[in-house]
Length: 200
Length: 200
DNA sequence: CGCTAAATGACTGACAGTCAGTCACTGTAC
DNA sequence: GTACAGTGACTGACTGTCAGTCATTTAGCG
Image 1 (cartoon, rainbow over the protein chains, first blue to last red):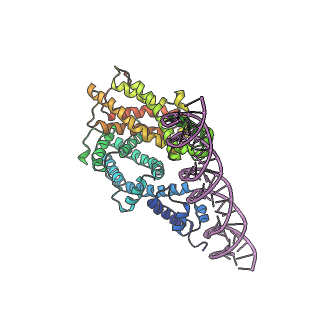
Image 2: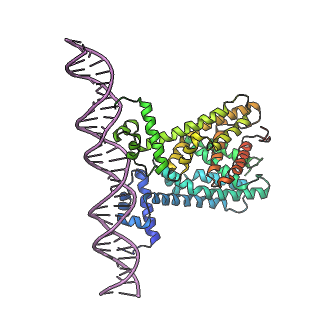
Image 3: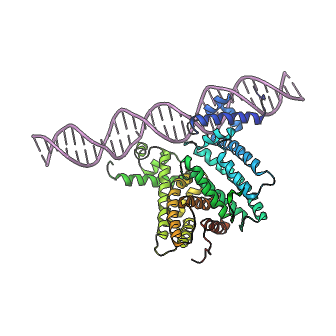
C-alpha cells in the first residue's frame, strides 16, 4: 500500500481522524492507537508524519486557525471599507465563527473542557496573525485620522487581549452580545476613536 | 509514622516537593513517583491528598496565585491612594513579582516552556481575583470622577486582558517596560481617564 | 529484478492510579 | 495499669494503558 497517497494528503487524513477522535473523547482520552485505527494506518505510520501526539494536536489547531483567519481576511480585504467598519466586521467574524458550518463544530470541540490544550495551541498561533491584521486596520485608521495611538503594535496587542478576555469572562452565552458590545466600545476608545461605532 | 502530621501540613509538604520537581524537570517529565520520593511518602498517600497528577499542578498554581494576590492586595489596600495611583501600583506589582524573592522563582518556573499547564492553571484562578480587585479600583475612580465607563465588570475584564496580552506579545524583556507603559496608557484611556498618568 | 523508501504492527518501557494489608494510636472495659 | 478492639492514615507492590520504537515486509521505480 506504499506510495499510494502523497505526503500532504496522508497527513491531512490523519489530522481529520484525530479531529474526529478529539471531538468524541477529548484529547486525554484519545490514544494514538485510536487515531491510527480511524485513519486506517499503522501506529508506526503516524510517527512518520508527526513527531508526537502533541504534534498532531498542534496540527489540528493549525487547521482550525487557518479556517478562522481565512474568514477574517475575507471580510477585512473588502476595499473601500473604513477602518472602523473593518474592525467591527473582524469582531463579528470572530464571534460568529460559530455560525460558519465549516468551523462551528471545530470551535465547539476546542471549547470543550478537557480540550484546553487545543484551545491554547490555537490561541498561540492565531494571536500573532490576528495582531498583524489588527495592525493593518489601525494603520488605516491612523491614515484616515479616526484613530490616535503612538504605537500600532502595542495597541494591536492590547486591544486583542482585551477582546479575547471578554470570551473568558464567564458571562452566560445569552449575555455575550452585550459583553462584546461593551468590549468593542472600550477597544475603540483605547484606539482614540471618538465617534459613534454604529455609523458603519 | 501515622498521624504525625496534620492534613494541611502533609499536603503542603507534597505541594512543595511537587513544586521543586516541576522546577527541575518540568511537569511532563516529573512522575508522581518522583514527587512522592522527594516528599518521603508512599505513592498511595499521594492519592489520599490529591485526586490526580493534574490536581497537584492546580495546587502548585494556587500557591503561586496566593502569593501574587497577597502582594497586590497589600499595595492596593493603602488608604488615601487615588484610583489611578492604585492602578499603577497594581501594574508595578504584577510586573515586579519577579523582584520578590518569594515568588520570583515560582514565576520563573511557571514561564518555562513545558510548564504551560502551570501557567494556564494560574491564569485561570488568578484572573477572576484580579478582575475583582480592578473592579474596586474602577469603582473608586468613578466615585472620584476620573474614570468614565458604563460597565465596571466589562471594563475590568477588558483592561486586564489587554495588559496580560502585553506579557504574551513576545517583546524582549529589555523592552518590556516600554511595552508596559504603552499598555498602561491604553488601559487608562479605555477607562476614560484623560489626565497624565505620571501625576501620581 | 534489485533498490529504495514507505508502511507495518508487535513490542517495550514508563507511568498513573489502585487496593489489600499494616501499624500507630485512641477509647473503653475490667 | 493492662488488655484489646476499633479507626484511619499510610504503604508499596501491582495492573492496565499508552506513547513511542524498530526489525521486517511490501510496493513502486528504473
